[in-house]
Image 1 (tube, helix red, strand yellow):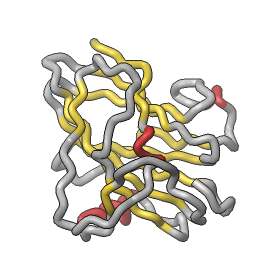
Image 2 (image 1 turned 180 degrees about the vertical axis):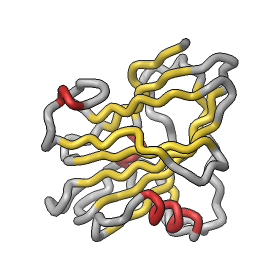
Image 3 (image 1 turned 45 degrees about the vertical axis):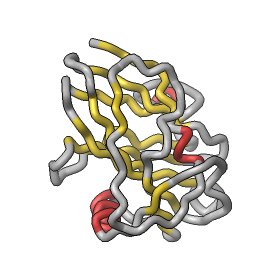
Length: 171
């Protein structure tokens, strides 16, 4: 089984630009040979000012075209509540792979990640990470938020990631 220890999700830090809802985002090709480089601009994002939406509500908002494409560089800025990001990974390898998706943001308080094979209706929660809990409770004890992901050979999977700073007002 191939493994990549650091697959940076720096694209979460990128500000969003309005794109028509019909705009398609290509799946991100992964093979288990990743080196920790940013994944590019294949992410869409939505601000949830209340921070109360669950993954089903995020998916409904995504299907309604309420997520926008992220492009460029920078942070999401000052905003209460939480942000949701959506992306798809496609394993281009003929072997199953394990990835470690690392979120880099020093102001982040919590991160929840959900995965479903492309086309499936049910998302399963991968992690619920928080600075309010010990690192030892994380699936990968690390000072940053790291999400373990497994993909079968040739599998494509869809992800929703919720991240925020509670009422602190920045992400």
